[in-house]
Length: 545
Image (cartoon, rainbow, N blue to C red; front, side, top):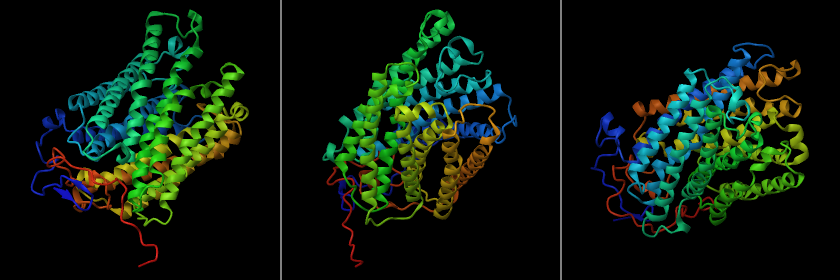
């Protein structure tokens, strides 16, 4: 059966139970092989750890409100900002969009009944839970004070905090990432609906595909590195500690060979989300589809070649510094292609100024600032001045939180009706997005100023001349937290009091909008057949008629 609205076959029946109603009970959720339920379990877990990481961030900002001690002593402060970084990067940011939203949406967008390996998908989730459990144990086992990068030689022998449990946690989490990447790649290659060619795949799927390449190729490097660090710390083997004949810069090369590509594991799915929301909520075919898809793969490839820009001051050769700086500038090209394509898509589109679009426009503003400030850190002479200052902290948060988490929130709102069958309060949604936008920029933009004036990062105390910038940043952080709590409040409330979601609330034309709302357990009746592209919206009449 074919749907004229979307151009795909396999329209749903209104009489069959949704995946939320079928097989109820906690036990059935725990052992489920349904990609949608696994995606929701990831989503709940990630949001729970986001709360932990966010509360730690607020504690750090509270401490920095004045130059002297306020809430924590220096040792506790080191552990708070380290655990904030470790939780947010390894547990929240890396799996945020791929494992939760991607798990739910990608098979629907492909017209598949599930991922290629459902049992492997469930195993990936429990590996993530197991790895996250070690991070939770670190919280109660004395904390972690090495910084989320675990830099040697401090982490290999000098720190008295719970380094081993944190390393094991990150090591285990890597296996979840690898297995998810393999599963997604096979699903995309082998389980697309008839007619869904590579040139018709939604750009969100392209983003997940590029992400999976990085997960499979880069994650083993950090796994080996963390294993070597564990061996050095427990057995005294000289690998990274110079006191044992090791080389601490070698650790940085290994770490950043993974950790810079993993930036794109976080941001490439976010790019895919924005491509979907820009097109759907402006009711217009995406501008430059092929260029956006190709740029995702290009970013994934170039991302493996730029790790050395984290080591400009490590003593590597001038030639290496120049080469890494040049390649880093090259990453800006495919990224700029995306941003320009999104803006061109919005031009003369029938824009819906709803919550999703507010977050999408906020992403474009914030991520562009993050990308442009990265140019200063890619330039050798300016990086010398800005290295290890709050300028780097601000840039990182504008890219990672303003990019990944902003798109994550946009994705939750975009697919919330499809996931839950309920509509949230649009007025509260728009209000919350404005509060989040104001709070975010007030929290992190002053850090650019403080960093450019020499404020070093990670310091418990600071000179009085930086107090104003820290106070503005702290006030902004609490406003941001308020906005996020408002967002969580109306989303949770919608589960109980929200209006029933219509079949296709945003008027999307990709395959996932042709399923029931919420989808049935096996997604489709029969085999869907893709008959047109994911952004083939009706032409907009610009004459006003």
